Image (cartoon, rainbow, N blue to C red; front, side, top):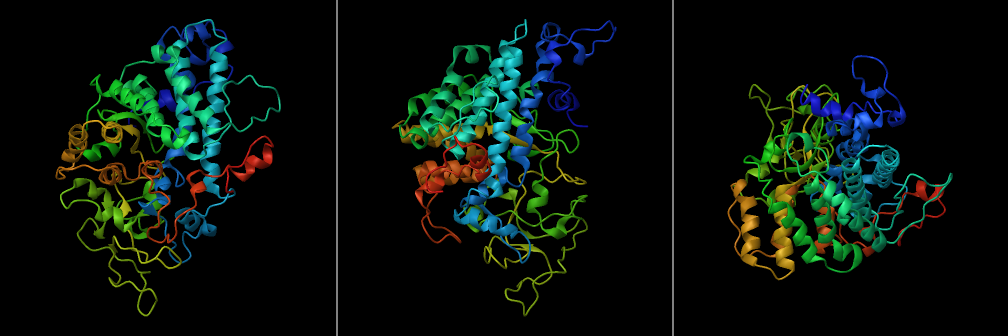
Length: 514
């Protein structure tokens, strides 16, 4: 089993909520569930046994069809076409694509529920740590920074949300909605608190691959400041640059030589991952991109235990945005598909003439960049598929590939953007972008513009969940595009508060427009 020691520490969750108040027994063997808080925290390596549960929310948040990959389906990058009776799903993906969603759509609840569950878990752990007569400063700092990450996503997606900083609240407490400005200030205060900053580890590598260290906290802070104009209507470029440089100047991260090594079944040795999610098909379930993107008839090619669903695919514009030499385009599975013996795979259910529409390629499976329509009759073969995570043959329902939440390449592109927007050196900005492009064998860019930088972020970070936030920041999110003919109303830059939450908590205020 891959990385068993890391995954067991993070995910086996030997922690019971009363663990810190239990006493040692007389057994010779040291049993973690019987340790006192004082004994447990004598060894800092034991910390993860206690607060691993706070990280488990990331697994279901990221890898689900409503997660990071699916997040890009509401942008100019990806889509979920309706292929006859498949992927209609009550029209939710049509609404998602055209920005006509409602507070009752399942997508809206997925992120809200998981993020606030993470906040609640962290608050409980912090409450228990504070009652332990032992040094838990590092644990508390890490948990507070992780909570700030959850709130970064909340402020980005929903804007105005409750701030719940403590577990010790009255029974039946219904937290009120707080304005986005106040949420921004809460995240900033947590990440700049000297207690948090001074106690976060600067250790990198295997032990902190999937944990918040000092550098991951600085990345969260840099993201917050990068989007400050969106969140609070005021730029914070100086602070954003300082947070980026706090990571870059220490020289502890670098670009992985091979782009696709960031997405393999064990990327824990990647020098590029600032924080990642180490999925495992047994110990850390939840990553199912192979199922919601691959064509039905590719199951045998990859010897998958479960049949793919033929859903999420790329829009033609992102495929065409790559230079012919750009290796990153290989992560968009396209063209005729062959089995391991070199025979073209056939789809016996292809759209045969005189069906309208009909498949001009016949039964041979040919994944085309062109998509004939969003709904109701998208061709079964239309659209290139998400393949930047190399498909692991024999995968069951879930794959064991790692997912980067923050990468060094993203950081370099962020710094380039900050320089362009704040009047910094255009030459330095171009050098940062071209460093990323060189790794992909793409030609260097001369005369870098914000428009080109947004395109480059798409080419580098596709299917990693950044596109919506990027497009909002660059002012293109509302624009008409393929199968979305009209300018979207401004209010859709925020999602609605899920109706189920409004019904349960009278102190919540729905976002404008909904």
